[in-house]
Image (cartoon, rainbow, N blue to C red; front, top):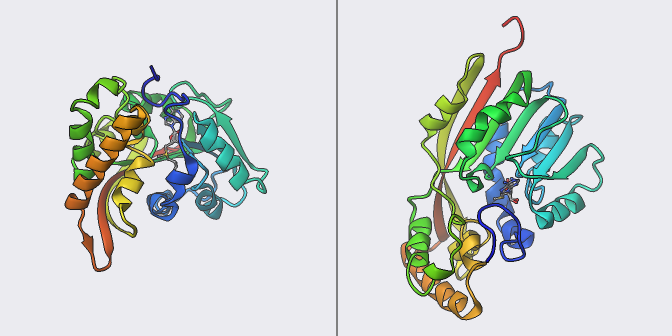
Length: 272
Ligand SMILES: C[S@@+](CC[C@H](N)C(=O)[O-])C[C@H]1O[C@@H](n2cnc3c(N)ncnc32)[C@H](O)[C@@H]1O
């Protein structure tokens, strides 16, 4: 049996090139998130769930001299990230679980783009993550808020049926994220100022089954990797057909509406 959730096993391994087929669309929310951070003097940064490093140029653009640590549990993703940023000696990586990672000292900025939703208990972890942030520092997070979208609804409906359901590892599917106000309240402790918003991106995708291609690189991964070959083939055909109906091709391409949640918490500096 493969292991559940974010833990890495051969069966659940991430595929960086499949994920990066939509690198520009997947990085866009990170660009929007970081544009609101407003902490030009940050010298130490942690990127939780950095994946294949697609966000590193965005971090480097805002903080040209900072030391950046990318934390991720996937060996495949970290190999891709190390290769991608090999010319930047001030970007280092640690293979670790976000749930247990603790930096040696507090940092100025903690960011996380499209990663915390992989941890079912991520809301409980936020206070611990905030403890890693120095006075004057910032936490900036983006997570998807699209679990009611047809892409996910159809995936979960189909995966819940026979002959697929019996292969799915309990707890391996992503739980829906909470509401934006829940996250605001989670991080709005004493001495923290909060800002949050939601955006629905309208991604224009090209190709035969672009929504399937998108989802198979992320949220559908635990389902697809759990199915034996015959069921996988059958599931893929059924899911693709359902997605084509839910996301018809228009004259400019297939439009994937994707809602995302953003929240930023700023820790007061001493004396403020
Ligand atoms: C959807 S990718 C996001 C990649 C990147 N941050 C981006 O902006 O596109 C999610 C990443 O979170 C990582 N991840 C999931 N659960 C994790 C955990 N418990 N600890 C560390 N990394 C985790 C995965 O390995 C994956 O690389």
